[in-house]
Image 1 (cartoon, rainbow, N blue to C red):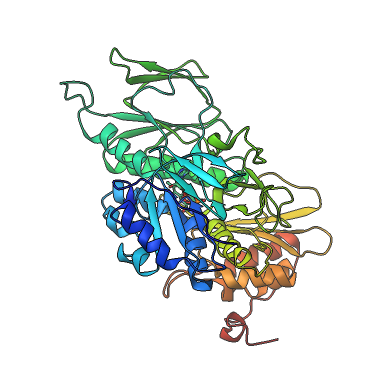
Image 2: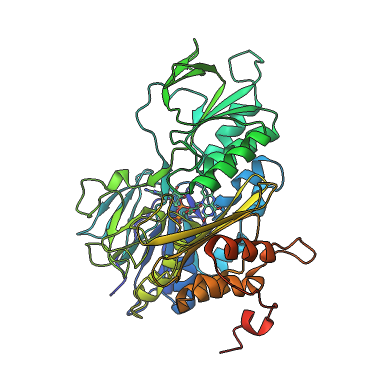
Length: 487
Ligand SMILES: Cc1cc2nc3c(=O)[nH]c(=O)nc-3n(C[C@H](O)[C@H](O)[C@H](O)COP(=O)(O)OP(=O)(O)OC[C@H]3O[C@@H](n4cnc5c(N)ncnc54)[C@H](O)[C@@H]3O)c2cc1C
């Protein structure tokens, strides 16, 4: 497809190019037959991975448009910036010169409209941009459920760079006009991974935290009972006021339109100066709703990440699969899935048709000091046809759960808390359909904790044998197996 005309009136919004003239001249020199202009909306992990791989695969002009920041940064590191462990510059995985060197044009603006017939985008700044191929990599936005007071000052989510700046302002500086009122307490609504991060962040600034969680355990739609209980104990150890089975009813305002308290479903009024809304995220696709693009909760895509419009693809947090890959959910909002989708879409756009096949689910996170990993499927509640073995160390900070099929004992999933496992090996065992007994026998190989850490394999196997009336014998560590050199 030929490059179509490119009309842009940015001088202030264009990065890597100083004026419209330079941009046009530059494009003229780059236009040649059979090139296609690829435009990516969103400079998060999915959008930039797509751009990087497209550049490796070809010479087509690539433009990334994003409203949030001029350059890609690691969203997962936002908490460390707030806590002072790193500067914002350190969250940028690539030097600013990377984009110019790789001929990837960056535009900081908001796309407000897409004309799929004319293949043209309209920006907030008024500029227009044509595309031959469009990739939507729009990410997520924090959920708001219509709570009274949810838009008051001092109420916020934690997702974007702007949220980080807002949190600084909300928690650091005197907020009421002329007043020097300090922030003593924050209320966080919704127990999940981002909520825990926010709690940790606020505590490092000496702000007390009340955590409202609707379920009867922490992250109750994901974690089984014992793991939820372990996180609850750990949060309490960190002086978090965790209130389970408690919902937000209303946020009360002071005379300046700023949050001053929340009212809970249990009728309690909790005074606070900041409210963090961390009740999950949703695909950030508001401006695409009720347009010619097929959407439900996310942008509908097939296994090739194609939408219902030719030459329009979608990737990352904003997509919803019409038929999810085996064992996976229709919407998955994690870092590595965005990266994988970016790689796959680049192949597809370059004509090397490839299905998105993420394999077994995995994820990892941290609850304050407890590292968490999960592989395969570990359901929050018992599932018919599945068996569970859960071991927990006496201190209550380390645990392992193995889920396996009741009939043939094939491994279905593993949760680990406070023990690091080797991802490649667990993934291989899942692919090979190994039994729980095999996994326990070779558990030493999976342990990825640093040298001289206490090990627990013998204890775990002993308890399994006793609970299941089994006779698993723990094998010695084998580097041959770890490196997949044995049959
Ligand atoms: C605090 C926090 C911690 C996290 N920690 C982890 C973790 O430990 N592990 C993990 O796997 N995942 C984690 N995640 C989730 C992970 O960061 C996301 O899954 C991932 O960043 C999504 O990438 P993306 O490319 O799909 O979208 P995003 O990174 O959201 O990028 C989308 C970009 O598109 C821009 N955009 C949207 N609409 C428009 C428009 N109309 N015009 C212009 N630009 C637009 C947005 O401004 C945004 O910059 C975390 C998320 C948060 C918020």
